[in-house]
Length: 360
Image 1 (cartoon, rainbow, N blue to C red):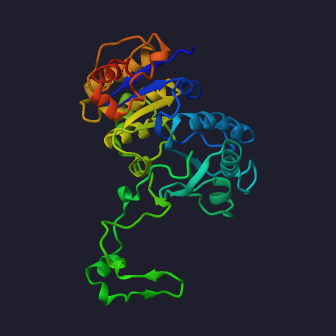
Image 2 (tube, helix red, strand yellow):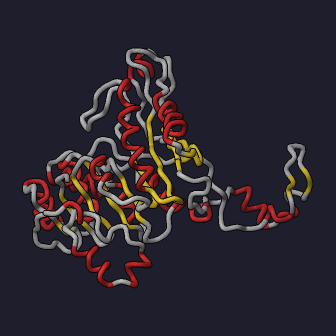
Image 3 (cartoon, rainbow, N blue to C red):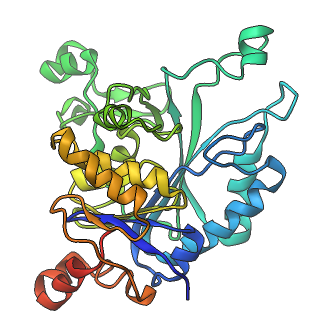
């Protein structure tokens, strides 16, 4: 039995301080629809949020991915964002993210549904030694994002993430006869008349261009007003938004096991999904409640944050500001959380159980 507590909760989710590996071990099999996370990367230099040395990194992460495989549903997905890195003291790239992927598939039986690449045009030039000083390498602006599954056909619907048509495609749809004739192309593609039909948008590519520009967010504004430092390695909400829309349905459960500032949980809630956030660092998770208080006056925000940060036994309902409680029985931590939305609607006792859990 392990000890932990809910730090805060909302109508859709709960944030939990603790070792995510141990927390996952308390969860039932096949209970999470999407696990999306961005663990500390295997960088050559240590960071303040904690990261493993490259030599130990893969074995460390594999402990987590084994448990992830047990708790996601048969048609569920695991999406992991991993930044690239250089070998220590050398302008040669590390292959840690690719080695991890291969070992996950070969040793644990994961299936690579698709590889994505997150291009962040706002990323600062790095590493400074090779890019800025010696000018012998280009700026590293792309993260690898592996979409993995237990089965060949995880739940997915690309219609939920269609992108805007290009200007050329818009013209073609408006009057296809002016721009092309249905025929077999030299490439072997049979371009039929249906090519000019408006399907509501274009199918996205696996190159996701999403700038990470959160400097003006309410979360960081509150952090500044409170005199605290926000999490230094936040990904933009558009990144989890894409995968949550693509791979889940409303009321599905989304989990982030390296939650940080809880961008994933906040995004899941905006999209009508249930969420869980696990984070080892109490201070980071305390500050993440600020994402859910963005419509409240600052004078109401401060006491809620201070309660979470200063009182280790405090629990806050981020939306209702319930009275403090102390979590006592870890086996009931996730009661009601994993019941399907359909079951909850049919069984009022389950619904009551879910909302009566101590908040995280």
